[in-house]
Length: 602
Image (cartoon, rainbow, N blue to C red; front, side, top):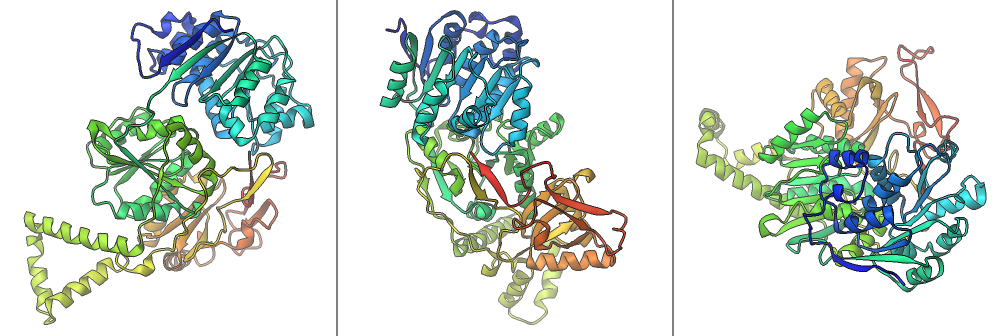
């Protein structure tokens, strides 16, 4: 029997307990302080001393969002031998996204001498083998990939581990990793310490405890509510490649919006922000590659309201606190429910009703189900606004804006021009209609909008484990009304998606309206533009350089999933390859992965 079976309310805070009271080293306390932490969460205040000083296994019943990663990472790092090349800790997680997050959290507390190796499907196996040969002290992985290394490759030795940690154990059961976990346990030594964390304790979890965990302490975190009830949560199920157009439709039907829009990666932030800028939205973006001073200026403009949309990664937006936000938008679902609750918790301040909107593609279905389980609520699925709705909203916005302008009398500067237009002799409504057609024909034309395909997948659908392949959605996936252009500008020119758009607009002397996928490669770039914009841009760049235009229409076989994983393109008609020479795309011959075509899923 356990000597400790403590139930704790996670919403309670005990300000008398600090990290300095938990018996941690000065070096670890310095790292914790550097991250801005002073008081441990409920589970941290109990698990850290138990793991540091006790000899028993630990069962933690805690939902995502209670700080359990740091609860086991901090004491484990205090007990790791940095000079040993043996694997001392094995951590299993249900998904590769969570594995990556756990590894990053551990790294934030670890000394430089501690090596951490990730193992999950979709990662280059050569990188994993190289990392294992380097002698990591900690391995974080998904059960399927760990089993692959143990049983097929014989490249993983865990018979000397001191800590075996199961994170989100009930979710691993839901996905179907029961047999893998029990098999992995057979490769571990008997004298290891087991830590099992689970939001619920289903029968299988209890069976694992009875069979493999003998003497243990149990800490139960009772978390009554993960999200503010004043936040209206909804999602749009949409094809991955239609996400941006869906986002724009949702923006267009909002009269007053003040958003933080979250993307999973820095590259996604760059791309989405650049596309929004091309649509004339007041938008800026922040992520880890942007200098601190620039981030501070951007946040100041966002807080004073001069920016209406801020696109950000989770890390960059961690300390943003804006009281009058109207929406938090998940352009991509986060890697775990904890991050989701942190994101949407930025709305609903001052007891007002605000919205949290998520765009969910088929590949996000498992994460959506996991989030709903964690928050104990179904997220309402909404239907995207119709094109007719968007156009009506735009017309009403134009009328409202004109009414406000008339109040301010700013139109007086244009009185003489207005009189000249009225002197044309046509009825006033015809003159106004002609002006609207000139300035707003794209805004009010149904042909300007792409047809979007909403998905109807079930939120509780499960993805197949293991070596599953899915066709990439980038590259030459058919997008109605768009053409893909090759641009002889690249990362070496310090190009980002935003600067690429600005370069094309400056050189061609036009405004790009419909920007699709943008891929900045090491030695060249690709950009998807509408048929109309593509024709204009190609013509202008042909005029600028008839022999070697910087932008030409991309050919399908330059980046096709049916072609080989690498290839070459010669810019210019010279038999010697021109001044820039030959451009290569795809992966190197040493790599099994392809830049285009297929990618693995864990």
